[in-house]
Length: 465
Ligand SMILES: Cc1cc2nc3c(=O)[nH]c(=O)nc-3n(C[C@H](O)[C@H](O)[C@H](O)COP(=O)(O)OP(=O)(O)OC[C@H]3O[C@@H](n4cnc5c(N)ncnc54)[C@H](O)[C@@H]3O)c2cc1C
Image 1 (spheres, rainbow, N blue to C red):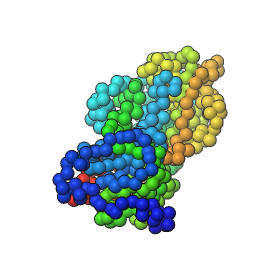
Image 2 (tube, rainbow, N blue to C red):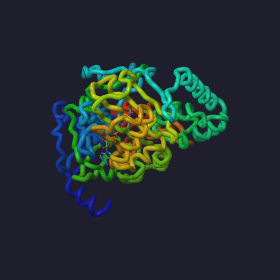
Image 3 (tube, protein in one colour):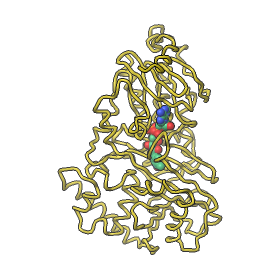
Image 4 (cartoon, protein in one colour):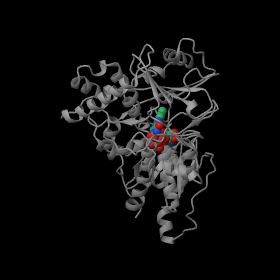
């Protein structure tokens, strides 16, 4: 322990396990959860559980444990709850900076929350789209369907054929002569696979890229904003915003000290839900260091990016009843998929997406350059007279200091166990949760939510006795 940390620790009260105290006194009343002041203040405190990160996984874990009468505090580095669920209303319509869809809403735990809130939803129609060639010719429905069938066949052949892992790009090239040289396959592999996995094809595991599980039903948009979900889950929790965790000191069987930008917090247990990008950059140091197997999972699992750019116009100059537009851009991943807001909002907004390798390029651009780059794609589809947008919003997740990317993916050489290892307690006092700790549903809000519930259950069932 360095001197600074020692000084901080000396300021704290002697450690008393609140949980064991409550258990021994049966103090149900004393154990009622703290209620959120919503403000961060420097203070030392002692809790049963510290949850690091107020994204949906951390909030789910905190809510679950609070309901079981654990005293829980959530420490959040940024000035907002929700993490990668964030809605911006600047353009008078919900711009989802992070998660935009409930993927597979049927029996999905996020849908259950939405029903409880009574939030209005819009069920999207995946069949309602148009695709344009790189020079702007509208593609026939038949050509698109043929392309889709061909890609499915290709993925199936890849599944059956190889006994060593390789990148999906390499596997496509080895399996089909035309492969990505076919512009339709090139577009679909990017707009569908690179978008859903958040990964470039040349880094994605051909073995495991599509081995995760899913819920069913066509994707749903929350027309009053996705951020209603974390707000609902956060209700009545003790959340300290602007509280960045720097060090977690944990001891087998003897609780933990969490050093933050505003002071030190003590607890019996810590659930750490910061994004994989934050773990990779070692923004938080662990003392003792994490076991080697956890460190290799953190370093091996991929963490990709997706860039969103919302462009708002005076008037719509595109067919307003079509939900998605695809553009078979020559550069893979460059503004190749668009969501038309007019199908669920009165605002004339096109939401452009860049995926695969392209976010690395797009997120280095100024807003002006990014808009020009995306408008080039828009004008290819809808004509060179398309006017300049009157408003815009852009994401740069790779530069977000509390995330450093969008979501996790199975990289070449990864196995599901790399993800699932992170779900196992590091010690009797420290666990991880977050979308990257659940192979079955990684990269999704429901995966993150379920991981929080899982961590809370393990803590209560296995560690707290
Ligand atoms: C662009 C984009 C599009 C997406 N689209 C979809 C979609 O359509 N559907 C879907 O289901 N999922 C989607 N996702 C994925 C989904 O948003 C995430 O899987 C999920 O929200 C992750 O939740 P989490 O709790 O694991 O992490 P997070 O939400 O990232 O929460 C982690 C929290 O930890 C905090 N933190 C970081 N460092 C520290 C620190 N040192 N101290 C304290 N706190 C810290 C962060 O600020 C953050 O609030 C998308 C994500 C992105 C980025």
